[in-house]
Image 1 (spheres, rainbow, N blue to C red):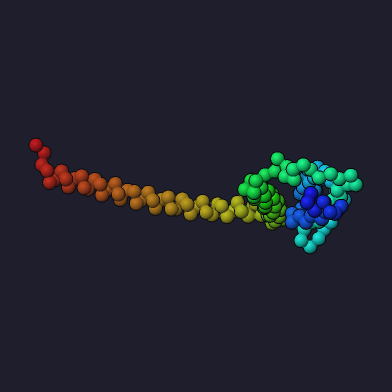
Image 2 (cartoon, one colour):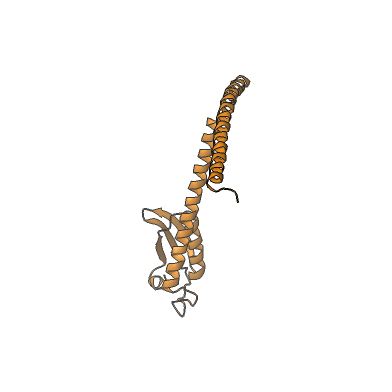
Length: 164
């Protein structure tokens, strides 16, 4: 910016950030660090254009590179972290929307039972109960046969081995 301001009074920077809130934060930060005045933030096809005015009594700084700038590696890490944060927040908002839609669908599909339907359901349960009793009797008869076979085996063993 300062090299451009050597011969011109205005600087136009293009930011490729998607949300206007991030662009405004970046614009305020650049305004503070450069000493210029933010004139406008305009929407352009590539992103947002930030226009700065250097001021009438502009003096170039002694060193063009401030001491508190990030290195390229740190700036890249910061940029990636910001992109990751923005992507995660968008993903979370999408998930919240789908959860709300699913909850709305479930509440819309819940059947409402009348008392007569409940009575019909109770009648069906009684019939199932009788069938369960029949099955239980069959299981008991199978058990008796198993007990008889065990007693037969024990009597055979006694027959093979005479008492001493």
